[in-house]
Image 1 (tube, rainbow, N blue to C red):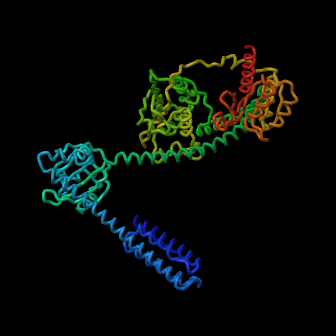
Image 2 (tube, helix red, strand yellow; image 1 turned 180 degrees about the horizontal axis):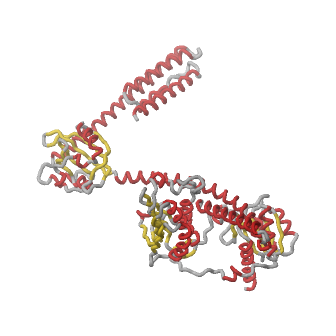
Image 3 (spheres, one colour; image 1 turned 45 degrees about the vertical axis):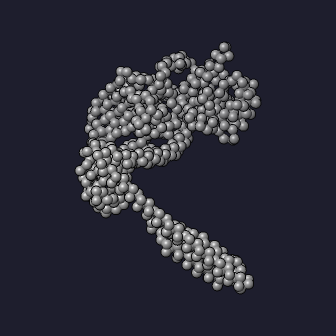
Length: 637
């Protein structure tokens, strides 16, 4: 470190010297151009020795002469010489004063060290009486001990408390017994110098725990013998603060990386959803019953299944980026376990035993039950892959109260009541290296084509979007345990507000609907689908076209618009214009982005109705019918 600092000082001196020389050469000879070399000499305040200051003064003198020789002739000769002499005087006066200052500081530092040693020695020697233990304990709030030949002969209460002993038990104990074994050789070298040194080490407490300490030693004379006094400071809190900063920085880097990948996957999912909307929609429009060829019907079924699998992939991408739409409500997690059990039995095979252990007094939590089932099933599939020869899978629920210390283990988790879902297997487990990357997006230990690397990432995304967290413990050869923490809610379970009639009733109608969609394939699908349900359809590909259509119509009952559109107008701006012209009409928004993303961009509010792409014709028709019926109810009221 000292060598590094000297290099920086040398570079600084060289830079100043060159700068002043160039400045001197630019001035007439009649000006005292050497005086600025005082700045070079002043850098000697950081010089390691007095000689360095005089070296800088000599260098300044030499460069003053060089400036005199190289400068263009001019000025009164005697004035020029006087000015150069004045520069020499200022340079050397500054150097001498600076050298005296540094000498004074060195002497002061030595005196301070000597005074501290004498003060400690005097204090100790004056306490050789029947009350010396009590007086000695008052010497310092830090740990203090006197060591003779490697053995503790005196110690104060702070020192004893630091190591968990009584003072009487410490007297006569070899000091190395209070140091962790791997550092004893180094500590022996430090204290054998019998001089003032400062170092850090790890102390060994009576109960076997470790305490980091800073040790400062100084030689003293005690009872006529040369001994060593040591002051110790507990560094536990300082180390914890440093570790907290490190963890915080690590979490920040991880969050930034997850945010970047999340934005990427969210954008990919949006574009993919637009494609799937056209594919699933048009396949859904095909009247399969009217197709006579069995092969054609099977081909359509396979294509529809593949498209729906693509929709599932976009869900997983959105789940990782924490942007999938959640329909959270107060729920009892135990109620989802029977359905999970049936799904898991068909998914993970008969050679794996499934055990469900619900807590009968489990609290309620605010959660999207469907996404929770998918998350637990994801963990079950991971467990299956970790147990190719069979094994035991346990799913358990319990109530957990996290204190501040417990909550601090997680990112952005507050202390309080939580519902914990534990999924445990006795498979092969994960190495520490794999465990560290387990929730990283697209990270997988499986072969090419055998896994997407989104399993644990989607579970993590679901938990975070539900204001919870996940915790993973794994030991190679023993298995893996994943815990999902979801915050407790005090709301009560309510029934589904939608009636069966709304879900299963006839979604047809004869109202007029304007569809605004920039994707031609999606636009054509929506128009065809709603036409089949009896609606009168109008269409536009962008905002200006939509305004033209609105201007030519007397009545439009509903606007179905994509949120993000070209030509300078977004869906919200079109809706504002639409409702100014048709104030009693209603609006349905559609997007491949989720409500959360659109809300962050201020393109949609909570009260606005949004249908996420992709969607089938029946889902679309039911949503349209529901909005129109709600408007009619409001008109009646």
